[in-house]
Every structure is written in structure tokens, then in C-alpha cells.
Length: 423
Image (tube, rainbow, N blue to C red; front, side, top):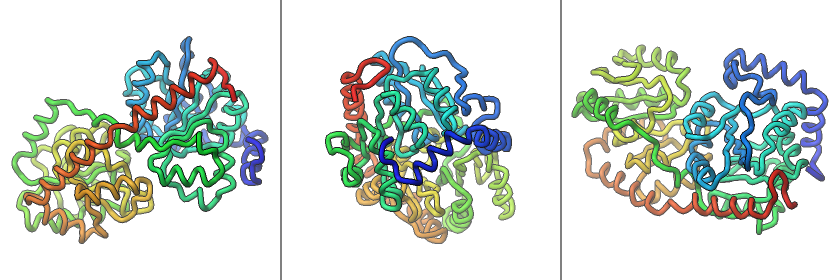
């Protein structure tokens, strides 16, 4: 990583000189439950817990659940071409999602120190390294580039760091042989930082092209039986800033819809106890576990249920949009025909939300009061059916990002030799 500005030089120097201190700090975080699974701490130190298969291997670094989901189908495409796919994540939830992808190897991302990254790369010797969206670690990138392993940044999204720290961002991006951007506007931002235009493509958003989240048909039948004919809505991927407004909205909307049911799925299931206490404080009857039963609120306290939720809830509020999180992937509910509500803070997927809003498939609500009004007004109305139909139209036009991205990756690999690039 040549001509790095001083913040990056400081990071790179520290990551080489102080690995033990960083490793101790990480171990403490892991055992406090703030990072990846404690039993797999060795992986964060770069020590592989799986053998490296023979043949060409593509390494995909996807930080968490959303990034993993966006490249799951692309991983299958690469496997169909004969490549082994290794996926690394930083979060436990991302690891759970990655291990559900058939045939994909999963490890936790090594700590960004010289020792950890070198151990990782010595073992896995990838033929191509792909980083998803924008989780860029200076030491990991520098060590990968030093070994002349081709690098690709996939599905680059809007990022405030490009304007806040343009020199550091430009230095990080210069190591990539290929960048695919979610939109032409993002492509223009990256080219403006000095990356050669020929390296930067705008094939579309991989999240929009992803296959629908799965759901077991028998389970769907059981859930619909539990919920019955009563009106229902869902709040999915919620955070602390979302849940107060969601509860208030439900209490307001049920005044106009007798028997209204709410499906509430926090982004992080380990927060379910706190959410349950907030619900109980309002007197709402809450069910947890596999089935909602007859309770007014089904609090979903495990992963893997969103595919079912988006199929059984005609109206979905997507969390992370009332607080600082920046919103979550709106394509997942849209592809399954759910009408979407979201708060004003959706910078992580601004183009996606804008497209769905403009098509009439989604609506922005400013606060809990507006959310309650929207739920009460839309449920059972022709307007809700129109939103769901609009979602189907939008998604029908969004399927080309994946084959275009795959073609770009295959072209990059065809231009390189195994275990080493031509740069």
C-alpha cells in the first residue's frame, strides 16, 4: 500500500509492532460476548480450524449478516465454476448465516495485525480476495496486496468516509484490481478518488439480485394457522431506537384494528429479554420461541425466521432506520411481496429505499406516531395491495447485478495465474 497517508501508516505500524496487546484486547472482547464465538478465538488470531482444499480458492470477506446474504448466491455461482469458496465474517450472526451456505467454508476474519493476517494468508493462499461493501482493514489489505493476490471490492455502497477521509479512502481503494458499485453515483465517487475508471463497474446492487430468503412450507402453514385471520404486521431487524416507536405504533393501530397481531424480530436476538421487558411494561401479551400461539405479539428471539416473516406479514417496518444504524436491506422484504415502511435514517441503502419509495412499494415514516398512522391506515386497504404489487414490479427489473458481477470476477481470475496475480 504505497503513499499511504499518516493515519494509515500509523495503523499499519501499530498493527505490526503491537500484535500481542491487540490479541489480548480481542480475547477479552470475545469472552465478554461482544465479538465472534469464544470457542473459535483461534481463527481471529489467524489460526485456521479447517484444512485448505486443493484447487483454486476464492476468499470472500463479508462482515455480517447483510453482507453474507448479498453474496450467498454469488458464492454458489463460483462453486458451480469449480472454485472453493472461503467466507470470513466478523460477527457471530454473520458466521451463522455463512455456515448455512452449502459447500462454503467459514472462518472468522483474522484480527488486523501483521501476525494474524500472515498466519491466515499462509494457510489459505487464496487465488482471489473479495471484500464486500466497505469493511476494509488496512493490514489485511496490505498483506494481501503484498502477496500479489488479486483483490476485488464487491457491491460498494455509499460511504461518508469518502468525503471525510478522502486520502485514506483513496489509498485503501488503490489496492483493488476490481470494484463493483451498487449505483453509477457510487462508481463516480470512487473514480473521483483516483481509481482508474476501467477498474470500477456499476453492475447493480447484489442485495437486489439475491434469491428470496428461504422458508419451510410446513412451518408457514403452522404460523398462518396460529395467526389466524386477524390483521397483522411485522417490525424486523429492530434496534433499541426502533422498538419504543414500534410498540407505540402498535398500541395506536390496534385501536382501529381489533385483534391486531405484531411480529417483532430484533436485529440481534440476544436483545430479546430487554425487548420482552419493554413489551410487558405496556401490558401486551407476548409469545416467544417457535410459534406465536394466540399472543398479541410474537417476539422472535432466534435467527433464520425473516424469510417466513416476510411471507406472512403483508406490511413490514424495517428497523435500523429511527436510530444511527443507517437502515437495513429493503430488497429482502420487497422480493417476497411485502409492503415496506421505514424511518428517515437509511443511508446504508439510500438508493434502494429511494427506488422503492418512488415506485410506491415503500413509505418513509418520521416517527412512532407516523408509523402508527401508516399501519392503521394501510392494513386491509387497497393501498396496501397496490404497494405490494409495486414491490413485485420493482424486483422484476433488478436481477442482472449478480451475473454481471460474476462475469467481472471470472474475467479478473482468467487474467491471473493460480496463487498470484499479474499486477
